Image (cartoon, rainbow, N blue to C red; front, top):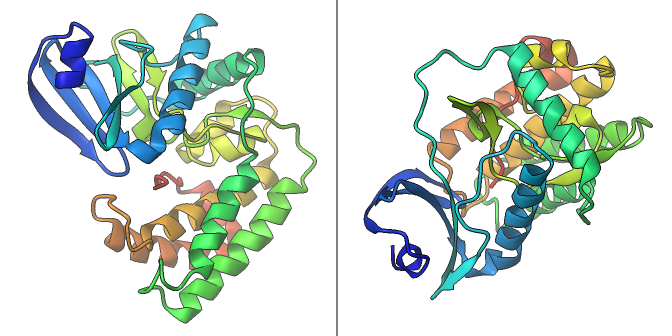
Length: 275
């Protein structure tokens, strides 16, 4: 709230909307959304603000910044965004979801930013799985399942020959707001370069049916890869995702099914979040 006041925003109260790797707060009465991250994430926060700013300039469907500044306070950094009142509607239709993602990708082709490749994020998951001290409760058989799946699916997607571009990195339903002005994407700290199928792997299964020029096999492989990644995050001893351990167990079961029959992902979405 003191950070908001330094920008001329009136904030007497803060309501927690989400608490995971980033704390998300609604400040009142100014009705602004604040994202609070550890000080170590300063560069990441700056990157996210820069991506959002540039995408907004080219008319992409993204949540608006309230301020372009990243404020450092003690042991954390804060960014400020427009707060959008939730719209009480059914889930965003697959066609509209695909249209918003296609427009986002079009904007990402225009902006010029240096970003890691999607394989860097896979490498982070592989490192986590290999580190017994960071994933002490992961059983040996499950560790082997995750390690082998990450390796095989990384190779399959990376070697597919599909064109690569700047991606959101995690455009799952939790990162697409339904607003009165239409669907808007949030959370750009996971942006990376890769095939569009990697982004589509995070969306509900029917979205890919409305997105042009999708490779079905690469999409299936990407869904299995993404499921293995988000499952790995849930076994991190420092994971703070709500109900994360239960989800880790559930997603391991789904991963076994996916490895046995990748077509299972024609019927279910991979919508887990990274750390």
